[in-house]
Each structure stands twice: as C-alpha cells, then as structure tokens.
Length: 168
Length: 64
Image 1 (cartoon, rainbow over the protein chains, first blue to last red):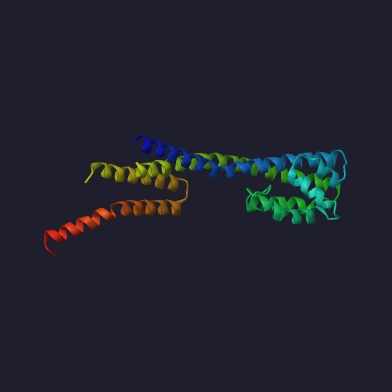
Image 2 (cartoon, rainbow over the protein chains, first blue to last red):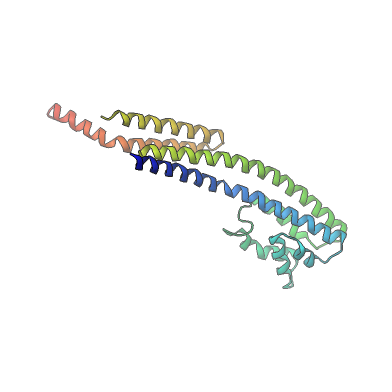
C-alpha cells in the first residue's frame, strides 16, 4: 500500500512538472521578445545618437539575434539579407527565436528589411515604431505566459491525480 | 464488487469534468471534448472486464 501511495505521489509530481515545462515556451517568448526589444533600443542609440555604422552597432548590442545578423553582414549582405539568412536557424527548435509567433516574425521582418536602407531620421522612426510594437507584444506575451503557467500547471496536477487514482 | 472501484470511477469522472471545464473556459473546447472522450474511454476500459463477467453470469443464469 505504501509503495502504491509513493508511486501515486511520484505520478502527481511528474505530471505537474510536465505541465510546468509545457508552460515554459510561453515564458521563453517573453524573454526572447524582451531581449530583442532591449537590443533594438541599444541599436537605436548606437546608430542614431552615436553614428556608429550599422554592422558595428548590431555587434555591440547584447542581443544574440542582432549579433548573428551583424556577423552575417560581414559577408557583404545588407541587414535584410542577413536577417533572411539567419531566420531559418533562429526559428528552428532550440534556436534563439523558436518561441516567437508568426506575428512576432512579421514585426521583425518589418524592422530588418528596412534597416540601413534610408537616412538617420527615417531609421530613428522605424526603430521607434518597431520598439513600440515589440513592447506591446511583450505585454501581451507576459499576460499569456501567466495564463499558460496557471493553466498547464493545474491541468498537469489534475491529470496526475487522475493517473494516481488509476494506479492506487 | 469492490466498493473502492465505484469511488475510483466517481473520482475519475469528477476530475475529467473539472479538466473539461478549465479547458472550456480557456477557450480550448476541442481539447475539452477530447479530454472528456478520453476519460470515457479510460473508464470503459476499466469496467469492460466487469461488464463481460456480468453478461456471462446472465447467460449462465438463464442457460442461454
């Protein structure tokens, strides 16, 4: 009887942890979006205020995605071409942007395709608008992550209880 | 028949109902339906043997 109770408790605990890990993807989206928004904020300062060239500005940010684009630009590509080259690797499972949605990628497409293609003021407006959109996405993603956390952990606990009932 | 079995089935039914409600309120009605059907299948699998014994008993009782 004691073994069965212990097994049931293990089942409940593991199902709850599985639920928590399923909710992790929503959290990763918030982290990725915040990282990209912070990177774009630094990029804006570097490009618009400090007049640092685009490639160097991208490499100086703390965002791995922007660093990756900066490195590809070293091969003679524009920012848009570098982004298109980096996108498949970033989107893959385990990539930097694997938790981002199609809407998030549309915002990033809008930024990188036009990056470095016009004069300073236009770039400033572009980065400013994109930052605004990304910040809205971060807030929405944070609310969704909280909801997903509660939902998946509760579901995991309930499924674990049900399996424990079957086991005992 | 062990009365614990009845309590088990009741407990599974209650948990499935709660799961279904949570999923419906989260806007995932399709998954809620799937969860309800899965619970039904699990309970049917649990009682299948007992239903078979029940019909065997009826058949032997009436010599059918």
